[in-house]
Amino acid sequence: MDKLFKLKENNTTVGREIVAGITTFFAMSYILFVNPEILGAAGMPTQAVFLATIVASVVGTVAIALIANVPYALAPGMGLNAFFAYTVVLTMGYTWQEGLAMVFICGIINIIITFTSIRKAIILGIPESLQHAIGGGIGIFIAYIGIKNAGILQFLADPNTYVNDHGTIIANGSIVPELVKFNNAPVLVALCGIVFTMFFVLRKWKGGILLAILATTILAIVTGVVKIDAHTLFAQNNLGVAFKQMGTTFGAAFGDQGMVKLFSTPSKYIEVAMAILAFSLTSIFDPIGTFIGSGRRTGIFDEKDFAEMAESRGFSSKMDRALFADMIATPIGAIFGTSNTTVFVESAAGIGAGGRTGLTSIATAVMFLISSLFLPLLAIVPSQATAPILIIVGMMMLGAFKEIDWDTLSEAIPCFFASVFMGFAYSISYGIAAGFITFILVKVFTGKIRDVKPIVWVVAGLFIINFAVLAII
Image 1 (cartoon, rainbow, N blue to C red):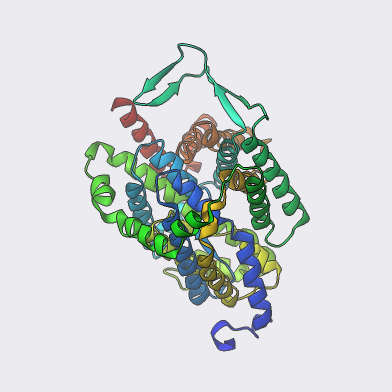
Image 2 (cartoon, helix red, strand yellow; image 1 turned 60 degrees about the horizontal axis):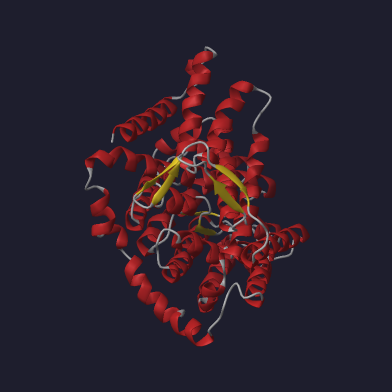
């Protein structure tokens, strides 16, 4: 064990690593309930997504443990799953099978660029301020989804300002969001859920987010928001049923409704490329931000590691190996039936508990395997219990905004458009587009056009072409 994970070299013990791994699991275990809830909105069978979430998490977490020997855990990423369900499927109109095909392609592309200088060109080419704006903007988007799922908002539209487009109501700018009346049980349960979540997070209880979900679910049962039929519950929600459902999602990315359909319409090729680009950008920058943010503070990644990454090719440095492990899990997750897998910032909880090596990650992976026994609980957890988690996670992601110099307009303008448009346009990719395009305009207007890296021109150009195609078709 010591030889494999270099425990003595990292001044740690088996016991400390196991405790750290369990801590990490409880900090991020909410994904087991939230991911099926979000992808279920796209029409995916939730029990299959539950299992796919476990598979992707175990594969990615074990990979990063054995390949890089660092104490990080992976799971389907928040923000990426929201983009999959609410933008790619519900807004852009693709099937969830096509969405999985996009995720698989994204994973393969990211694996390829991990071995080349393209990854470094992307990372070094996109301004650091925009990277922070994208992270904060995804936080706005996730929090907004949480508020909507909690049922706290309703939307008003003036008469004769909306149309019915094949069952979808499309309103113009006159639509106004407002608070609902707090006179029904589901909304009141959601509000209590927000209070529970705030309490556990502020008290810094281990597994606090999971406890908040549990407390809100119990309240939902007591108040009748969730009704339980024990026989039906366990008969329809078990590993047997889950594996049967997984027959629907496993390999669906490559079927007639997946990869085949995705590339059957040439007029949509650019739009598909934009969606894959949006998946890829987040997949590239999320782990980098997590590694930099927690690695520097804890010493998991020191200055030597960052210097080696800048100069290395392939995956010779520890950082490159960690990034490579991160990329492996995404295509595997897509095969089983879940959105992009990424490094979880909640890994910092385990690191804070003393985790220093990949043994911490192995302990977390084992906990994910054990969690498959709790599948019946998935059917009980209502959206009122998971919505507060989306709000809190989104709020936490807003911390990226503090790295932006808002007093300098040339930096603030593209960051504003990149982040705010994600929520207002209800699309992560449109936010990225707004940020890139306004960044170029700022540099042109201030006479600093040479500051725009070629990769930014390419990405902005692709987005503009995408908008032009959408306006024509």
